[in-house]
Amino acid sequence: MQGHSDVSIVGGGAIGLATAIELALQGVSVTVLSRNFQEAALHAAAGMLAPQAEGIAPGPMLDLCLRSRDLYPEWINKLESLTGMNAEYWPCGILAPQYEPSASKNWCDRASLDDLQPGLGEEVVGGWWFPLDGQVNNQKMAQVLRVAAEQLGVRLLEGVTVERITHTETQVTGVETTTGIYRSDRYVLATGAWSGGLLSIPVVPRKGQMLAVRAGVSPQPLQHVLFGSEIYIVPRRNGRIVIGATSENVGFVPQNTPAGVQQLLTAATRLYPPLKDWSLEQCWWGFRPTTPDELPILGLSPYENLILATGHHRNGILLTPITATLLADLICYQKIDPLLSAFHCDRFAVT
Ligand SMILES: Cc1cc2nc3c(=O)[nH]c(=O)nc-3n(C[C@H](O)[C@H](O)[C@H](O)COP(=O)(O)OP(=O)(O)OC[C@H]3O[C@@H](n4cnc5c(N)ncnc54)[C@H](O)[C@@H]3O)c2cc1C
Image 1 (cartoon, rainbow, N blue to C red):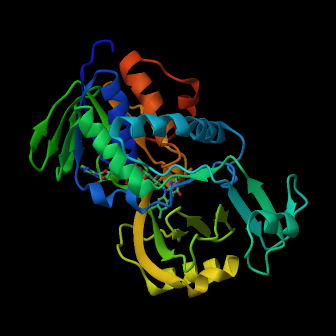
Image 2 (cartoon, protein in one colour):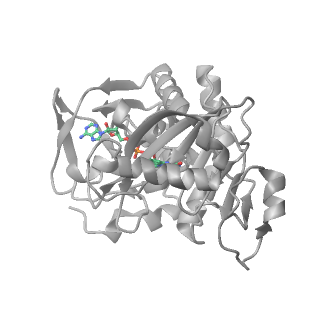
Image 3 (spheres, rainbow, N blue to C red):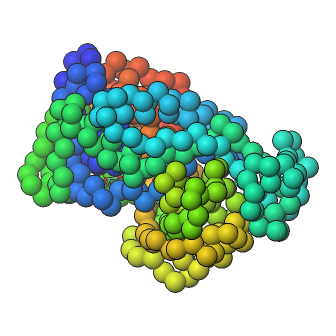
């Protein structure tokens, strides 16, 4: 690394921890300032790695997502080797069943879908199969990231709220927190849905309600993620089945609502009826960090020593490896990957 030996990362979610790990692997001294590990969207997510099932249009965002999906096996392997833990990465493929027929390419008829996954709802007429998409158990990944960061000597300061970023016209000079002022050579802002509170940056929360059921038979019969038009169903190998998600512009309003849970259950049992008799295990919610164009904000900022890593909206788990890799290259070697230009903050007015 040239010049800068000391980085403070604000935010201990997927993006902050993964970036801390990549920097520590390059020999950088890193401190992560995190208000609350548990409130991170990292924990709330479904863990789908779904650039193709999401139907992202060709362009920089799809390129970024595909690059990240390609990085996943090796990146997870590296973390698992470091920690001896398992993040349950599972390239299980994603099936996207539809209720309306389509003439678009790669359409699979109902019989082909039944071969891949029996038990789909009777209204399903066909769909698409994305064998390269998959999933990771994001809650396990959260533990792996944390332990890996600790093992690499990252200073994890939990329960520390950054209240203000102080700066001159060109440089960040420090972060004022509930436990004092922290200063370092460089800073990374990775505060997810809360980023708009620290910098004038258009990131707002998009609430998602989720629930999980436990398969009533063993081994559980779902072997692929089901990505419907109004619902997704993500089977874990241990029999837990994660179902999501609502998409609500309600600010930081916590809790599940009867309407939200009802919406999920109605859509899930329509798509995959067998789960209507299985046991309801848990409900939770989280806040996606969402920008006006629903694309992340990555890279350089108006301040020379502040890097932005936020706004990952509904693909932040998928985008974790590529974000951490590109930002570590930027911080350590001043290497600006051409893809980063599409996600620069100057597409918005940032002060
Ligand atoms: C319901 C739901 C389902 C999702 N499903 C998927 C999926 O299937 N696949 C996928 O790829 N993505 C999914 N996502 C999106 C993904 O979870 C997010 O994009 C990603 O977790 C964002 O990571 P982050 O590190 O930017 O933010 P977070 O994980 O939210 O972490 C932000 C951290 O910053 C801390 N923080 C905030 N403000 C401060 C402050 N002032 N001082 C100190 N610390 C602070 C918080 O405490 C938190 O720990 C989903 C999200 C939700 C909500």
